Structures are given as C-alpha cells and as structure tokens.
Length: 180
Image (tube, rainbow, N blue to C red):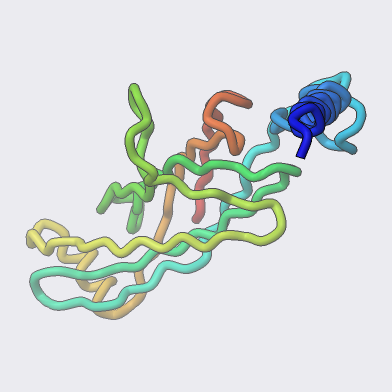
C-alpha cells in the first residue's frame, strides 16, 4: 500500500475530528447545554436543585441497649444532565429532641481522592438508604418508650451538596429540606 494514502487517511481523519469539535462548539463538554450538538448555546442554563423526599423511616430492631433505624431518601434530578450528589447530611429528631446526626456520602475536601458520591440521572429517581444505631443511655426513657411501641414523632432536617456531572462545571450547590 502506498504510504501517501495512509498518511492522507490519517490527516483526513484528524480534519474530520477537528471539524466536528469546531462545529459543535462547547456543547460536547458543557454540562448545562440543552439542545442539539451542532450549534452552541448562547445562554448558560441555571442548575436546578435536586428534589429530595423522605421515602421511609423504619425501626428495624429495638432492645434495651440499642435501636437500629433505617432512613430512606428518594432523590430526583430535574436537570437535563446528570448530577453528582456529594453527600446528604441529616439530623433525626424525635419529639423535637435531636437523637442522631448521620451522613450518606462524603464532603469533598482538597484533592478529590475518593469516589464516595452518587450520580443522579435525570430519567429515574435514586433511592439512598442508611442504617443507624442509637444507643440507649437511659437519659431519654420517653424516646425508648416511643421506639419500643413504634410511635415516634420524627422530624428530619437534611442538607445536601451536589454539582453537575463534571467536578469543574456548575459549581458546588447546597440545599436544605425538613420533613415533619
């Protein structure tokens, strides 16, 4: 085979790749872009906050020393692109007394070295569950009575941190929710 044809094919391939990238503008790498990939977006789109619902809070086991509780969150993404959920930090209250603080995921600090985050797609909600254990110190007998009779009056406050599917695009966003 003639080397001129091989070199010509390679050069033509590079020209085609450069043309595709040039005509698509920044839409290939822009996480906020909505539309087709031929024309770039003139205006940047605002990142919509994630929607977090309390799916369920269940008492799995109660004995005289400890109680195991499972908390379930349903997270929906109203954005066109996927979202990275870094963490959900929540406080559980029973009868307005805080009984536990817990977190799902991690707070990114400095150089991101772990992958303990969740990708939330726009098509389907994501369910995240967390099991926590509450030790019986004997200081709150009303709490233990409510747990053993399965009649607690829960309140949960939630703080979530998220950004677009790229760690560098869209900035870090935080939202808070409260569930009675």
